[in-house]
Length: 510
Image 1 (cartoon, one colour):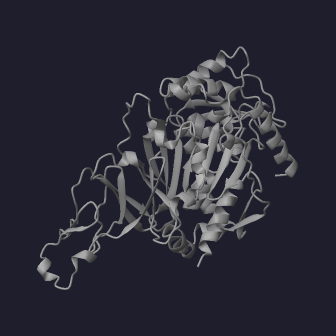
Image 2 (cartoon, one colour; image 1 turned 60 degrees about the horizontal axis):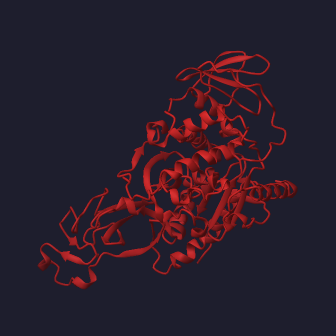
Image 3 (cartoon, rainbow, N blue to C red; image 1 turned 120 degrees about the vertical axis):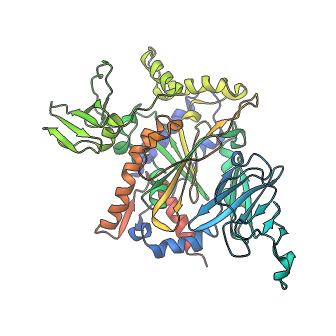
């Protein structure tokens, strides 16, 4: 992106902050842009088994990584396996406010100690031959101990990995010589002062197998550049290609999607009719998508041409033959019940007689909702804090701004470089009255399941369907391309560039 365009964004962003009627957190005025490109990434890095194996040795065995949340382990004796790239670790609540992480392997014959999450155990006993350990990792019992005459009990404690904690998240690091966790995350907590992550609970947790490399999925959710083509239905309120402010800080990066800048040359279209049918328009070319029934969409171009398409955007009939597959997915896919927030936004937008900007309108609704949960801070929150602010903590954890529930994690699916696990975690504010019920289980989806099979995600499930439609095709395209590299934009792909720089640094370490 041209330097002048970025400077225009920075100026517009600062002017937007200056118009706020509430105090702005200092973190919003931090500027830490990335240096100029180019950034070229070898395509083989996304599918090569050799490169994947290098990542295991140089990255996953050495880096701090989010492994669990305190809500996964509410009681002493609760445990949760964490699997990553062919390795397995067992996270255990060993005492009040105390957590340990062990290699998930029996010291006798190597059987995994635990396959699934469990509750209130008083020991960790191997199901194969019955060796048992106390929760603190010390050996408890060895059946037929007489048959191991040279065994020294003091050497039979479960090997531990280091544990770090932030915002009720539990991180682990298998490298006993790793840097302190606090040094690794740096000043990331300083971006969440009004509602720190320590004051949030796990409301939902959905995981899905994706047929692409973990880095391809990881990078897909780092930037707003893809919104133009993949999510055109949300190009509202002046969204365009210079609408997100990006910064990098040590091991993490940040994006602030302003949603308040006037679009450069966005066409203007007449309002859509309100006749009860599901209609949406692509604001870029004016094509109107109408749901006929589930799996069938009719599209009309501004020049009057029409066509009908199935859910995969395959042309069925008509003289209009090429359309946006993501809008077909949105219009023709399974219906999702709107949340109360979505309904409130739609209702207020209809009654928006004062022509309040959509970003400000959405902030008002979120502030009203926050008053019902944490009233002590609701009126202190500025409008910009309710916008889309998404961080990436290297290598694979994405906590969003403190007033957005979304968190992501992307990790390899076993040792297959062509598959990964995508997880969406909703974190909600802990009510000031202390009454809440956290999510108890991960809702798993297979590679062929639809995101709307997880209704707890609301309308975000339909957005994910658009994103995930791309990803297996990205993986196939990376293998099909005649080029040796993918090329990342200087500014709009700041966060993927920062990620690749850090990854290269880690993989080049001795």
